[in-house]
Image 1 (cartoon, each protein chain N blue to C red):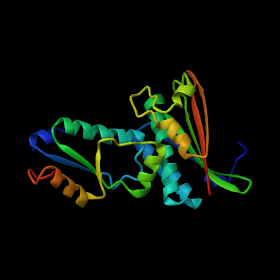
Image 2 (cartoon, rainbow over the protein chains, first blue to last red):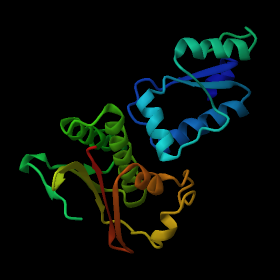
Image 3 (tube, rainbow over the protein chains, first blue to last red):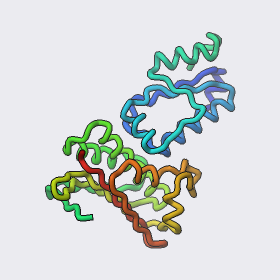
Image 4 (tube, chains in turn yellow, blue):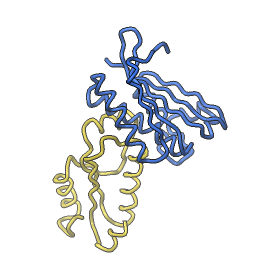
Length: 91
Length: 140
């Protein structure tokens, strides 16, 4: 969060590839992080939600409203590039 | 519920008192789920349910335990999870089971969500005495 200020970041990528479970608490934490980063003026994209994790999240009833997601790091960078119009380098 | 434990060695008990214990409890559940031949998706549902229940223990009761075991009922085989704590208990179970209700500022989808992703769900809670939640998922 403070790095968004010190690095003047325009975008943040949260990579959850290594997570085998995203329960309601973890999902909420990620969503809140994205909301806070938005308040700091940067975009967040969550990348790497595994297929079975996505399945479980939907079954559980988790929604990640207004939070951008992308398949992987590469797609996440492409998303931020487009969003930030190749301005600052994404963190 | 007439399900009975399968093999004696298939009961695993994990003390839960911190977020680190969640990982251990999830892993135990996943090991048994895979042993039973659950698909990766089903095993993830089981691990997610365990995570929710273990998280509730840490948040509301501070400590408790998760017991994971293989069970069978006739020809059906499944995985059974018991989440037990001696915490404050739940004042109004109906309210706690309602979608969108939370006393901790969460999504309020924990318990109703767990009930949805499992085949059987049972909750017993005494205010001041603690809470026991028992869930089962059968192999299809």
